[in-house]
Amino acid sequence: MNILIVEDNKELATELKESLSSSGYVCKIANTCEDALDESNSNDYDIMLLDLGLPDGSGFDVLKSVRKKKSKMAVIVVTARGELDDKINGLQLGADDYLTKPFALTELQARLFAIVRRLGGFAQNEFELYGFTLQLQDYKVSYNGIPIKLTKKEFDILQYLVLNKNRVITRLQLTEHVWGDILEVNSDSNFIDVHVRNLRKKLDKHTTIEWFETVRNVGYRINS
Image (tube, rainbow, N blue to C red; front, side, top):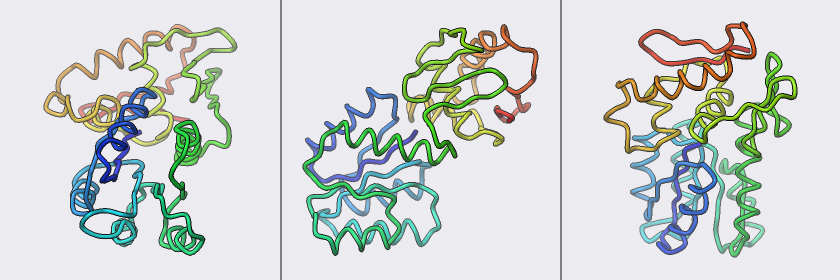
């Protein structure tokens, strides 16, 4: 998942980015309302962590703008403002969740994962398809109970495709959501294809069902 952290406290923003990056999220930081809107308008983010007290305005204005554009990006308000009126206002404006500072990083992680499950349409932490079981939170994959050893990047690719099942995901989307911006210029190379080929080789050992589709000159799709 691609996360935009909107936070003017640079120390806290860095701490959040490091913690979430270590859990497999791809994160970018915006310190102002203007930067947040520029980023959300020009890049594809799945989730925004939104502080309310920003130096050039209110986070509520950012939230209003995001929802006015009918963006499907999930928004978690993360703020020191814990008054009931603020919580109600944030949720009514379209926030998916509201977390009051100070908070434990483990609680934030749990709330993020609940949103990830919801974005993927999963009620549980597991996804089953054609005998495969993908344990989203534990980074484990098995086939009829037999563990399949994947690298971290292979699991990230599979998880992102599963979360967007029945949709064609382009190489650029995989680049942005699994590796971040660093490989954007190389998204048309065979770098992505090599990782996907290795992943498919491990999965195809267990079934002949063609559920992992390559869409020629575009990208990939998981069919369910």
